[in-house]
Amino acid sequence: MNEFGVGTYTRNIIRALAQLDRQNKYFLLGPPQKVTEIGKLPDNFKSVPILPTDTLRGEMQYRTVVKRLNCDLTHIPHLYWFPRRLPCPYVLTAHDLLDHLYRARGGSEVKRFLHFHFTRRVLKNAARIFAVSKFTKSEIEKLFGIDPGKIEVVYNAIDKRFLTGHATDADRLFLAERYQVTYPFVLYAGRISPHKNLVRIIEAFSALKADLVKQELYPDLKLIIIGDELSKHPDLRRTVVRGGVQNDVRFMGFVPIEVLRIFYDLAKVFVFPSLYEGFGLPPLEAMAHGTPVLTSNTSSIPEVVGNAAVMVNPENVFEMMRALERVLLDQTLREKMRQRGYEQVKKFSWNNSAESIIAAYEQVAGVGSSTTAKQRRVANS
Image (cartoon, rainbow, N blue to C red; front, side, top):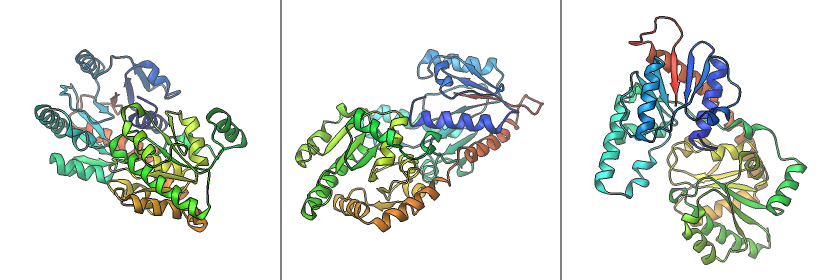
Protein backbone atom coordinates (compact mmCIF):
# COMPACT_ATOMS: atom_id res chain seq x y z
CA MET A 1 0.00 0.00 0.00
CA ASN A 2 1.18 3.57 -0.58
CA GLU A 3 -0.22 7.09 -0.16
CA PHE A 4 -1.72 7.25 -3.64
CA GLY A 5 -2.80 4.92 -6.45
CA VAL A 6 -3.42 1.32 -5.38
CA GLY A 7 -2.84 2.39 -1.78
CA THR A 8 -5.77 4.82 -1.97
CA TYR A 9 -7.94 2.08 -3.44
CA THR A 10 -6.98 -0.56 -0.87
CA ARG A 11 -7.39 1.66 2.18
CA ASN A 12 -10.75 3.06 1.15
CA ILE A 13 -12.28 -0.20 -0.06
CA ILE A 14 -11.33 -1.94 3.19
CA ARG A 15 -12.80 0.94 5.23
CA ALA A 16 -16.04 0.74 3.24
CA LEU A 17 -16.19 -3.06 3.53
CA ALA A 18 -15.72 -2.69 7.30
CA GLN A 19 -18.66 -0.27 7.49
CA LEU A 20 -20.99 -2.44 5.45
CA ASP A 21 -20.07 -6.04 6.24
CA ARG A 22 -19.94 -7.35 9.81
CA GLN A 23 -20.85 -10.90 8.76
CA ASN A 24 -18.04 -12.18 6.58
CA LYS A 25 -14.56 -12.63 7.99
CA TYR A 26 -11.66 -10.76 6.36
CA PHE A 27 -7.94 -11.48 6.61
CA LEU A 28 -5.69 -8.58 5.58
CA LEU A 29 -2.45 -10.10 4.31
CA GLY A 30 0.57 -7.81 4.27
CA PRO A 31 2.86 -5.66 6.44
CA PRO A 32 1.08 -4.79 9.73
CA GLN A 33 2.13 -1.13 9.54
CA LYS A 34 0.18 -0.76 6.31
CA VAL A 35 -2.93 -2.18 7.94
CA THR A 36 -2.64 0.32 10.80
CA GLU A 37 -2.85 3.14 8.21
CA ILE A 38 -6.43 2.07 7.50
CA GLY A 39 -7.52 2.87 11.05
CA LYS A 40 -9.67 0.98 13.53
CA LEU A 41 -11.50 -2.00 12.04
CA PRO A 42 -14.23 -4.26 13.46
CA ASP A 43 -13.53 -7.70 14.93
CA ASN A 44 -14.28 -9.55 11.68
CA PHE A 45 -11.15 -7.97 10.14
CA LYS A 46 -7.82 -9.48 11.14
CA SER A 47 -4.30 -8.49 10.09
CA VAL A 48 -2.07 -11.40 9.04
CA PRO A 49 1.61 -10.41 8.56
CA ILE A 50 3.33 -11.85 5.49
CA LEU A 51 6.33 -11.03 3.34
CA PRO A 52 5.89 -8.89 0.19
CA THR A 53 4.33 -11.06 -2.53
CA ASP A 54 6.61 -9.73 -5.29
CA THR A 55 9.25 -12.28 -4.22
CA LEU A 56 9.14 -16.07 -4.64
CA ARG A 57 9.39 -16.59 -0.89
CA GLY A 58 6.61 -14.10 -0.24
CA GLU A 59 4.43 -15.70 -2.91
CA MET A 60 4.87 -19.15 -1.37
CA GLN A 61 4.04 -17.80 2.08
CA TYR A 62 0.92 -16.08 0.69
CA ARG A 63 -0.33 -19.35 -0.79
CA THR A 64 0.38 -21.26 2.44
CA VAL A 65 -1.40 -18.70 4.63
CA VAL A 66 -4.50 -18.57 2.40
CA LYS A 67 -4.71 -22.38 2.59
CA ARG A 68 -4.17 -22.45 6.36
CA LEU A 69 -6.90 -19.87 6.90
CA ASN A 70 -9.30 -21.96 4.80
CA CYS A 71 -10.33 -18.89 2.79
CA ASP A 72 -13.30 -19.08 0.45
CA LEU A 73 -11.75 -16.52 -1.89
CA THR A 74 -8.96 -13.98 -2.09
CA HIS A 75 -9.09 -10.44 -3.47
CA ILE A 76 -5.93 -9.11 -5.12
CA PRO A 77 -6.27 -5.30 -5.40
CA HIS A 78 -4.19 -4.85 -8.56
CA LEU A 79 -3.48 -6.55 -11.86
CA TYR A 80 -0.44 -8.81 -11.66
CA TRP A 81 1.24 -11.34 -13.94
CA PHE A 82 3.38 -13.58 -11.74
CA PRO A 83 1.74 -17.07 -11.92
CA ARG A 84 -0.08 -18.08 -8.75
CA ARG A 85 -1.51 -21.40 -7.63
CA LEU A 86 -4.06 -20.46 -5.02
CA PRO A 87 -6.16 -22.95 -3.02
CA CYS A 88 -9.35 -20.95 -3.54
CA PRO A 89 -10.97 -18.74 -6.21
CA TYR A 90 -9.59 -15.24 -6.60
CA VAL A 91 -10.95 -11.91 -7.77
CA LEU A 92 -8.78 -8.98 -8.78
CA THR A 93 -9.02 -5.28 -9.46
CA ALA A 94 -7.63 -3.95 -12.75
CA HIS A 95 -6.76 -0.26 -12.52
CA ASP A 96 -5.28 0.14 -16.01
CA LEU A 97 -3.29 -1.67 -18.71
CA LEU A 98 -0.41 0.79 -18.72
CA ASP A 99 2.22 -1.94 -18.50
CA HIS A 100 0.95 -3.40 -21.78
CA LEU A 101 0.67 -0.07 -23.60
CA TYR A 102 3.07 2.79 -22.81
CA ARG A 103 5.53 0.82 -20.67
CA ALA A 104 5.49 -2.21 -22.95
CA ARG A 105 7.79 -0.48 -25.41
CA GLY A 106 10.81 -1.23 -23.23
CA GLY A 107 12.43 -4.57 -22.48
CA SER A 108 13.09 -7.58 -24.68
CA GLU A 109 10.51 -9.20 -26.93
CA VAL A 110 10.68 -12.37 -24.83
CA LYS A 111 9.94 -10.45 -21.62
CA ARG A 112 7.05 -8.60 -23.26
CA PHE A 113 5.63 -11.86 -24.60
CA LEU A 114 5.84 -13.60 -21.21
CA HIS A 115 4.39 -10.56 -19.45
CA PHE A 116 1.42 -10.49 -21.82
CA HIS A 117 0.91 -14.29 -21.78
CA PHE A 118 0.99 -14.61 -18.00
CA THR A 119 -1.23 -11.56 -17.48
CA ARG A 120 -3.82 -13.00 -19.85
CA ARG A 121 -3.70 -16.30 -17.95
CA VAL A 122 -4.20 -14.48 -14.65
CA LEU A 123 -7.22 -12.65 -16.08
CA LYS A 124 -8.74 -15.77 -17.63
CA ASN A 125 -8.41 -17.72 -14.37
CA ALA A 126 -9.91 -14.99 -12.19
CA ALA A 127 -13.40 -15.71 -10.88
CA ARG A 128 -14.26 -12.02 -11.25
CA ILE A 129 -12.44 -8.92 -12.49
CA PHE A 130 -13.27 -5.49 -11.10
CA ALA A 131 -12.45 -2.83 -13.73
CA VAL A 132 -12.32 0.72 -12.38
CA SER A 133 -14.02 2.19 -15.48
CA LYS A 134 -15.96 1.15 -18.56
CA PHE A 135 -12.91 2.17 -20.57
CA THR A 136 -10.67 -0.23 -18.62
CA LYS A 137 -13.22 -3.02 -19.01
CA SER A 138 -13.28 -2.46 -22.77
CA GLU A 139 -9.47 -2.49 -22.92
CA ILE A 140 -9.31 -5.81 -21.03
CA GLU A 141 -11.82 -7.34 -23.42
CA LYS A 142 -10.04 -6.11 -26.56
CA LEU A 143 -6.42 -6.66 -25.57
CA PHE A 144 -6.72 -10.00 -23.77
CA GLY A 145 -9.91 -11.46 -25.21
CA ILE A 146 -11.58 -11.81 -21.80
CA ASP A 147 -15.27 -12.69 -21.55
CA PRO A 148 -17.06 -9.40 -20.72
CA GLY A 149 -19.46 -11.34 -18.47
CA LYS A 150 -16.75 -11.88 -15.85
CA ILE A 151 -15.68 -8.19 -15.81
CA GLU A 152 -17.61 -5.83 -13.56
CA VAL A 153 -17.17 -2.05 -13.54
CA VAL A 154 -16.58 -0.88 -9.97
CA TYR A 155 -15.60 2.78 -9.87
CA ASN A 156 -13.00 4.42 -7.67
CA ALA A 157 -13.77 7.44 -5.49
CA ILE A 158 -11.66 10.07 -3.78
CA ASP A 159 -10.06 9.73 -0.36
CA LYS A 160 -12.26 11.23 2.36
CA ARG A 161 -9.43 13.57 3.40
CA PHE A 162 -10.20 15.62 0.29
CA LEU A 163 -13.71 16.22 1.64
CA THR A 164 -12.75 18.14 4.78
CA GLY A 165 -13.71 21.63 3.58
CA HIS A 166 -11.90 24.57 2.06
CA ALA A 167 -8.51 26.01 2.95
CA THR A 168 -8.46 28.21 6.05
CA ASP A 169 -6.38 31.30 6.74
CA ALA A 170 -4.06 29.02 8.70
CA ASP A 171 -3.70 26.77 5.64
CA ARG A 172 -2.81 29.76 3.48
CA LEU A 173 -0.24 30.90 6.01
CA PHE A 174 1.22 27.39 6.13
CA LEU A 175 1.66 27.34 2.34
CA ALA A 176 3.24 30.79 2.42
CA GLU A 177 5.70 29.92 5.20
CA ARG A 178 6.50 26.30 4.39
CA TYR A 179 6.42 26.43 0.56
CA GLN A 180 6.71 30.19 -0.13
CA VAL A 181 3.51 30.10 -2.21
CA THR A 182 1.95 33.57 -2.13
CA TYR A 183 0.94 33.95 -5.77
CA PRO A 184 -1.79 32.62 -8.12
CA PHE A 185 -0.93 29.29 -9.70
CA VAL A 186 -1.96 26.59 -12.14
CA LEU A 187 -1.54 23.14 -10.60
CA TYR A 188 -0.61 19.67 -11.78
CA ALA A 189 -0.52 16.82 -9.26
CA GLY A 190 0.20 13.20 -10.07
CA ARG A 191 2.94 10.87 -11.12
CA ILE A 192 5.84 12.16 -13.19
CA SER A 193 5.63 9.85 -16.19
CA PRO A 194 5.68 10.31 -20.00
CA HIS A 195 2.01 9.40 -20.41
CA LYS A 196 1.07 12.19 -18.00
CA ASN A 197 2.02 14.68 -20.73
CA LEU A 198 3.96 17.14 -18.56
CA VAL A 199 6.14 18.41 -21.40
CA ARG A 200 3.05 19.74 -23.19
CA ILE A 201 1.71 21.20 -19.94
CA ILE A 202 4.89 23.25 -19.59
CA GLU A 203 4.79 24.26 -23.26
CA ALA A 204 1.14 25.35 -22.96
CA PHE A 205 1.90 27.29 -19.78
CA SER A 206 4.84 29.05 -21.45
CA ALA A 207 2.57 30.14 -24.32
CA LEU A 208 -0.10 31.19 -21.84
CA LYS A 209 2.35 33.39 -19.93
CA ALA A 210 3.44 35.12 -23.13
CA ASP A 211 -0.19 35.84 -24.06
CA LEU A 212 -1.06 37.11 -20.57
CA VAL A 213 1.92 39.47 -20.63
CA LYS A 214 0.50 41.11 -23.76
CA GLN A 215 -2.80 41.64 -21.94
CA GLU A 216 -1.08 42.75 -18.73
CA LEU A 217 -2.86 40.03 -16.78
CA TYR A 218 -1.61 37.68 -14.05
CA PRO A 219 2.03 38.85 -14.15
CA ASP A 220 2.94 36.63 -11.19
CA LEU A 221 1.11 33.45 -12.31
CA LYS A 222 3.11 30.26 -11.69
CA LEU A 223 2.82 26.61 -12.67
CA ILE A 224 3.24 24.24 -9.72
CA ILE A 225 4.00 20.58 -10.44
CA ILE A 226 3.55 18.12 -7.58
CA GLY A 227 4.87 14.61 -8.12
CA ASP A 228 7.83 12.34 -7.49
CA GLU A 229 10.76 10.99 -9.55
CA LEU A 230 11.53 14.30 -11.24
CA SER A 231 15.25 13.42 -11.39
CA LYS A 232 14.44 10.65 -13.88
CA HIS A 233 12.93 13.15 -16.33
CA PRO A 234 15.52 15.79 -17.32
CA ASP A 235 13.40 16.62 -20.38
CA LEU A 236 11.06 18.57 -18.09
CA ARG A 237 13.82 20.92 -16.96
CA ARG A 238 14.94 21.34 -20.56
CA THR A 239 11.38 22.23 -21.58
CA VAL A 240 11.20 24.86 -18.84
CA VAL A 241 14.46 26.46 -20.04
CA ARG A 242 13.42 26.27 -23.69
CA GLY A 243 10.13 27.99 -22.87
CA GLY A 244 11.83 30.74 -20.86
CA VAL A 245 9.75 30.07 -17.74
CA GLN A 246 12.53 29.15 -15.30
CA ASN A 247 11.15 31.63 -12.77
CA ASP A 248 7.54 30.61 -13.25
CA VAL A 249 7.55 26.79 -12.95
CA ARG A 250 8.06 25.13 -9.57
CA PHE A 251 8.59 21.41 -9.01
CA MET A 252 7.42 20.58 -5.49
CA GLY A 253 8.13 16.85 -5.34
CA PHE A 254 5.92 14.67 -3.17
CA VAL A 255 3.54 16.23 -0.63
CA PRO A 256 1.20 14.36 1.76
CA ILE A 257 -2.55 14.41 1.22
CA GLU A 258 -3.09 16.88 4.06
CA VAL A 259 -0.92 19.40 2.18
CA LEU A 260 -2.07 18.43 -1.31
CA ARG A 261 -5.66 19.31 -0.42
CA ILE A 262 -4.55 22.89 0.33
CA PHE A 263 -2.82 23.16 -3.05
CA TYR A 264 -5.96 21.84 -4.77
CA ASP A 265 -8.09 24.37 -2.94
CA LEU A 266 -5.96 27.42 -3.72
CA ALA A 267 -5.14 26.61 -7.37
CA LYS A 268 -6.70 28.82 -10.05
CA VAL A 269 -6.91 25.87 -12.46
CA PHE A 270 -6.04 22.20 -12.11
CA VAL A 271 -4.53 20.85 -15.35
CA PHE A 272 -4.46 17.12 -16.10
CA PRO A 273 -4.10 16.44 -19.86
CA SER A 274 -3.02 12.81 -19.43
CA LEU A 275 -2.65 10.65 -22.53
CA TYR A 276 -3.92 7.54 -20.75
CA GLU A 277 -5.83 6.83 -17.53
CA GLY A 278 -7.56 3.73 -16.25
CA PHE A 279 -9.67 6.00 -14.06
CA GLY A 280 -7.89 9.22 -13.05
CA LEU A 281 -8.62 10.43 -9.52
CA PRO A 282 -6.83 13.84 -9.46
CA PRO A 283 -9.50 15.70 -11.48
CA LEU A 284 -12.17 14.56 -8.99
CA GLU A 285 -9.92 15.51 -6.06
CA ALA A 286 -9.59 19.02 -7.48
CA MET A 287 -13.35 19.24 -8.14
CA ALA A 288 -14.03 18.39 -4.50
CA HIS A 289 -12.37 21.71 -3.67
CA GLY A 290 -14.32 23.70 -6.26
CA THR A 291 -11.27 24.15 -8.48
CA PRO A 292 -11.89 24.33 -12.26
CA VAL A 293 -10.35 21.38 -14.12
CA LEU A 294 -8.81 21.24 -17.58
CA THR A 295 -8.19 17.69 -18.71
CA SER A 296 -7.96 15.48 -21.80
CA ASN A 297 -10.70 13.98 -23.94
CA THR A 298 -9.11 10.52 -24.10
CA SER A 299 -9.25 7.10 -22.39
CA SER A 300 -11.40 6.98 -19.23
CA ILE A 301 -11.30 10.69 -18.44
CA PRO A 302 -14.56 11.81 -20.16
CA GLU A 303 -16.31 8.99 -18.32
CA VAL A 304 -14.99 10.25 -14.98
CA VAL A 305 -15.33 14.04 -15.31
CA GLY A 306 -18.63 14.14 -17.23
CA ASN A 307 -19.61 17.75 -18.10
CA ALA A 308 -17.77 19.21 -15.11
CA ALA A 309 -14.40 19.85 -16.80
CA VAL A 310 -13.05 21.51 -19.93
CA MET A 311 -11.59 18.76 -22.11
CA VAL A 312 -8.98 19.18 -24.85
CA ASN A 313 -6.96 17.12 -27.27
CA PRO A 314 -3.94 16.36 -25.05
CA GLU A 315 -1.57 16.36 -28.04
CA ASN A 316 -2.50 19.90 -29.12
CA VAL A 317 -0.49 22.44 -27.12
CA PHE A 318 -2.22 25.45 -28.70
CA GLU A 319 -5.67 24.08 -27.84
CA MET A 320 -4.51 23.42 -24.28
CA MET A 321 -3.15 26.96 -23.94
CA ARG A 322 -6.34 28.59 -25.23
CA ALA A 323 -8.48 26.46 -22.92
CA LEU A 324 -6.26 27.33 -19.94
CA GLU A 325 -6.64 31.01 -20.70
CA ARG A 326 -10.42 30.71 -21.03
CA VAL A 327 -10.79 28.82 -17.74
CA LEU A 328 -8.52 31.30 -16.01
CA LEU A 329 -10.28 34.45 -17.21
CA ASP A 330 -13.95 33.53 -17.74
CA GLN A 331 -15.57 33.99 -14.32
CA THR A 332 -18.97 32.73 -15.45
CA LEU A 333 -17.40 29.53 -16.75
CA ARG A 334 -15.39 29.11 -13.55
CA GLU A 335 -18.50 29.29 -11.39
CA LYS A 336 -20.37 26.85 -13.63
CA MET A 337 -17.45 24.40 -13.43
CA ARG A 338 -17.26 24.80 -9.67
CA GLN A 339 -20.90 23.77 -9.19
CA ARG A 340 -20.75 20.96 -11.73
CA GLY A 341 -17.57 19.68 -10.11
CA TYR A 342 -19.20 19.37 -6.69
CA GLU A 343 -22.05 17.37 -8.25
CA GLN A 344 -19.72 15.13 -10.26
CA VAL A 345 -17.73 14.10 -7.17
CA LYS A 346 -20.94 12.90 -5.51
CA LYS A 347 -21.46 10.31 -8.27
CA PHE A 348 -18.54 8.23 -6.98
CA SER A 349 -18.74 6.52 -3.59
CA TRP A 350 -16.54 3.92 -1.91
CA ASN A 351 -19.62 2.53 -0.16
CA ASN A 352 -21.37 1.95 -3.48
CA SER A 353 -18.23 0.26 -4.81
CA ALA A 354 -17.95 -1.91 -1.70
CA GLU A 355 -21.58 -3.01 -2.03
CA SER A 356 -20.87 -4.28 -5.54
CA ILE A 357 -17.74 -6.06 -4.34
CA ILE A 358 -19.54 -7.74 -1.43
CA ALA A 359 -22.21 -9.01 -3.83
CA ALA A 360 -19.47 -10.43 -6.06
CA TYR A 361 -17.74 -12.04 -3.06
CA GLU A 362 -20.99 -13.79 -2.13
CA GLN A 363 -21.54 -15.04 -5.67
CA VAL A 364 -17.97 -16.33 -6.06
CA ALA A 365 -17.69 -17.89 -2.58
CA GLY A 366 -21.17 -19.38 -2.83
CA VAL A 367 -20.17 -21.63 -5.71
CA GLY A 368 -18.21 -24.69 -4.72
CA SER A 369 -17.44 -23.30 -1.26
CA SER A 370 -16.57 -25.68 1.55
CA THR A 371 -18.25 -23.30 3.99
CA THR A 372 -21.84 -24.22 4.73
CA ALA A 373 -22.50 -21.38 7.14
CA LYS A 374 -23.40 -17.90 5.94
CA GLN A 375 -20.04 -16.43 6.95
CA ARG A 376 -17.42 -16.29 4.18
CA ARG A 377 -13.67 -16.00 4.72
CA VAL A 378 -12.00 -13.45 2.45
CA ALA A 379 -8.29 -12.78 2.07
CA ASN A 380 -7.34 -9.27 0.95
CA SER A 381 -3.74 -8.69 -0.05
